[in-house]
Length: 534
Image (cartoon, rainbow, N blue to C red; front, side, top):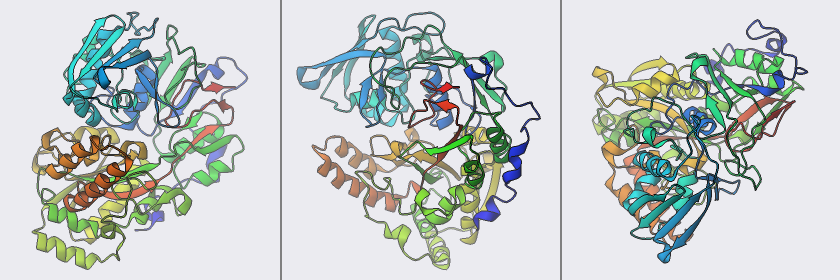
């Protein structure tokens, strides 16, 4: 399938001449306009609770509304954020964290240690690394209003990385009364501890999300803003997220100044935007985005590992990545295994399954030998999410060429997020496969990679049961050095190519687009502190 077939109808240079919504262009000389930033997110925020979903748009929403005990700097090292500091005693088995003074929630209540304890427990129930942490926790308490105490069965060197990591879900600090909500049940109030307040009264589902500066937020006094660490100083009064009906409309709005920042400019429209002297296009996340096709392991046909394994022979990663970001090879990589290229655990173990010559007829024979007999494959696709839609279109074509009976269900991303939570068979509203991206940061190692877990009903959507992966993962946590971790990583990848929890589809690098009068944009994630609008 050619990329031009997937992205046909994209608008060209002429789109930049008129207003995307028929509105007059904003006057940047007006003081009020310079304090409101208008952002085009990757999709609407259909799930507002950042603990119950791994959707990145919800994580980005979370960083506006809530704060974290620790943040990550540009070297991926944890730094105190809400925490004033910490002490480690008893050979690493007693860890004490002290909160900074002056921290408040949006309802005016002080942030207390018991809020943090409850938040850590709720987050850990959903997070891959948090779950491992809690197996080592003998006691987690709040001895006083500013002190969080961990008593561990044995040292857990990744504790601060776990509490500060930006990979989903993030350990955001909520009021105790909200954090005590069942981890599988969405919270109903967006009462945060972060630099912005969520404006529920201005929310328009499918169209707009609004945040306003929280005047009582206290940034760290010292340090340099970097990634999610350092002082979170807010220079904006409001941040408005506007969901666009299509990429052409988004490009038009950014190009003529109706919008200030577009998170994911599509490949076909980037050349036009680059010719606009008022627009900046920059790749701000060096970890890239890794595409995957996720199987539902609970029901036929993909409860059969041999069928999953057969499809490895049909994957052409370059087809998927060029559909998403274009043919410029500097923007994508196509030898991506179960750990991102260039990261410490990346290896060539088993990669011939993806790099050997492609032979669709052989794949058909392998599927038949594995027992595939025409069972329906319900492929759920996000029609309003250009990069995911591109993956799904190529994937749909791939499965059909392999002779699979595909029911292609295209809906908005929010509906995909809701449907993928169903564990029912396809005839009762379930699903067989969906496509998504993970940040390279979220796939660095088995401690953070949720898609590589194999603990059955407690695993991420798709729910694979892979005992050997889990055994090796446990060994990885105890590995004494990087060399030992890499050896285990090679074993994990070898098993993954046999069990196939998902199909690796390649890695690409996404540029952000924003107006030239926007300054202070931080690398990593779309963060809105430190940002100024002239």
